[in-house]
Length: 458
Image 1: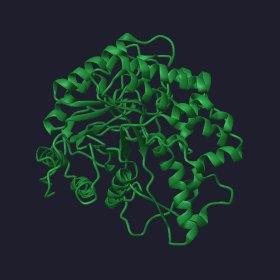
Image 2: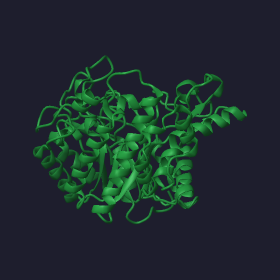
Image 3: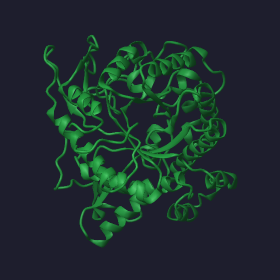
């Protein structure tokens, strides 16, 4: 980089509690849906993760050494409220109280995410997750309690990790849905109840904690048409509207997309959207736009069967882009797409932009002696940081910071420890916990240099 990023720029990391904490049956924690998932050939169980419940101060020391000044973490709903509703667990709240204080003592700004897919098991079993409005009510009660407990010390808040996943077929897995036919109506119930949870907690944060900031976060789906054929272009545009823009419009104070509400009316789903809900949505506005980005996608409309809901287009029409390289997991590397998202967010919505997940997952093995030579990770982050710089200095975007995924290796979203994202190696495998030693990789020293120069020296 030949330009230094703005003073106060936030450098950091994002994690979820289910992928890091472990201690699944300690400290008064209740069961979550992940605690009952069995291990398989290429997936660990979730009971130990990277044991950050016991080792987080060691990880915080690495963050401080690296130069990080922001850390997004998830509060485990079932750790602070074991049944998801009802009595709160003071021991669990005290854990996060210490956790936040230990971050602040190291000069690291905490960012709280309230939900990262691990529904309290009791709510999933009783109500089938967010398909039921009573789970929305329980989540809002939990979120208000966390804002009351920590709002004076936490500036940045998120309700849901990657909220647009609740508008995709993956909603049933991440929304606590355990049984049923996964109908389109249920998908719209889940996505609306999740959005209402976000809206009500945004109002509560603004009303009770002036100056504290709520963001909306997407797993942004950057989808290119496979060709310039008009139907490819139109289907990619539709998918963007339903999966990205529909949420961004709510975050920016515009309400749901007319195109989405047209489907609601046509399918007979309007009863899901109560008048009082729409009134709350009409007056909400987020303080920043957050997103995760790892790769872009390409959509082939010929593969989409007639009558397919727009929400399902990518399941049928996903196609490899011949102009992009891919990781061993098939994720296509596209730094220019990162710039495009940042620039469009700011051009369209005039709200500060905050990319809070970005990284590359690779199978890596440590020889027990030498740091892992991960030049590919350095190249990935350098190219994406350069794209972000171009969005700021060439395109005029206002960007709060950059949070990578991640600082240390953690379980992937599928529970596979082979897929490593960190600049610090964690010495464990899917079925062998070993000693969990933290070992900085070559990319750690590179990123340390980047942060110390505030992006000038890459």
